[in-house]
Image (tube, rainbow, N blue to C red; front, top):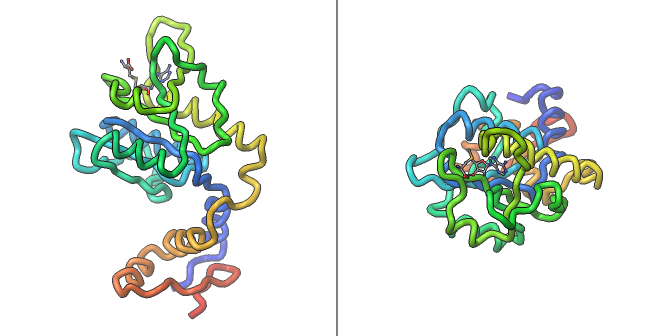
Length: 217
Ligand code: SAM
């Protein structure tokens, strides 16, 4: 029943680096391989939550590209872009749309050590006008070649690794940034997913975990 100590410590190591105040919001990014690649990058950067709205699909699906990283990210779907943006604003996030406008800032000018959400637009149409008007600012990755834009998952990676660079410099990955109650809840769910569901069904609190992840009843 108990999981291997090595696995438990690996899970803890990853959770210790998760950044609850850095997130991504996707607007109608509907191709599973793009969403999967974005999720995989989020995992690598230490993002815990990803937000999405999708007018076409009921629920976004993942492809092989995610390499299972979708298990380690919480995906929140919102009914529409206004609701999603309001939700993030309410949580004190500054929201920057990766979006081409005359006023867009170079993505390296943003301070990503503050609570930040990056809005990414649809493969074909980009960020909607409605969303662009609701966010705190627009950013671009300068394009110096013949094509006008990057693939959305590539744009996500470029911006998110700049955020990671800034946060590493500020030592924001050195100690856990999660609230203790949330930390222990996620740690149990990631360590014992099947058991966690049973506890949830019974509406019983999760048990404590020992030094090596053993269940202490
Ligand atoms: N024709 C669309 C447009 O004008 O926005 C292109 C969409 S692009 C393939 C998909 C998304 O990737 C964009 O909405 C944006 O969020 C992001 N993106 C791609 N290249 C970018 C760049 N150079 N700077 C900022 N965001 C970019």
